[in-house]
Length: 85
Length: 91
Length: 130
Image (cartoon, rainbow over all chains, first blue to last red; front, side, top):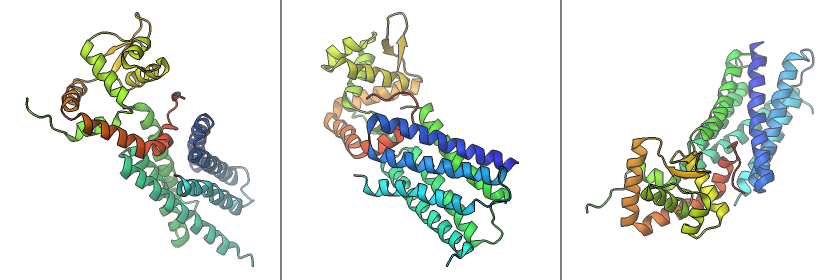
């Protein structure tokens, strides 16, 4: 129970970060913000999947899906950080 | 060759490695700008790295463990604090 | 006159100043003791009004200046602490003695960190200057 609350908080935090990053990207078009926004959007999704996994679908294991989401989420940020000039 | 647990470990390892590199970038930004916003982000990603590594290496460390999600909460709390801190004192 | 020392606090203050016009605005408003609004500041600093409006907004947010509601978006010098005022006094003296160094510091932090700073600025929730 408390785990779901904590995962919910994590989801809200990454959602907030994603929203702030998208807003700034749309305003300034600074590339790194796009990659970061994509990353935090993906992390939000992965946190939401985590909540769903623990709360709504206790018998189905969403682990592979969640792990894939987390991994895919990090890729744009890594790319953006390395190629930023 | 779909080795379920092997695959999970592979992906967890990849997540740990990428989180470590991302954290390192933020640490560099912190060193360069002195803005502790980046320190907090760097620590957050490094804490998640440690969490994933332990998940893969320590048999006792599991997702259901309260300690696991407390560490995760700590990582996200740092990001939250970084955002609040940045908006509280603009100088 | 004894040369002003560059303390750690002063250095941090200088690096936190976004641009030379910001610095000039601070010293101008502080020295005049009067209230300034964006058009008046624009005229004095030879800048467009949008730029000075942004500068005044930044100074108010940094609690170096305060808005006077009666005088219609006019700003007067109102540092949040006495230490800040003392520090700005040191800044003024140091700037007058080391003009080029301070200018370079502000420009260097701008050039090197502008992109990285943009990332951090994305997390501010009030509107950035476009």
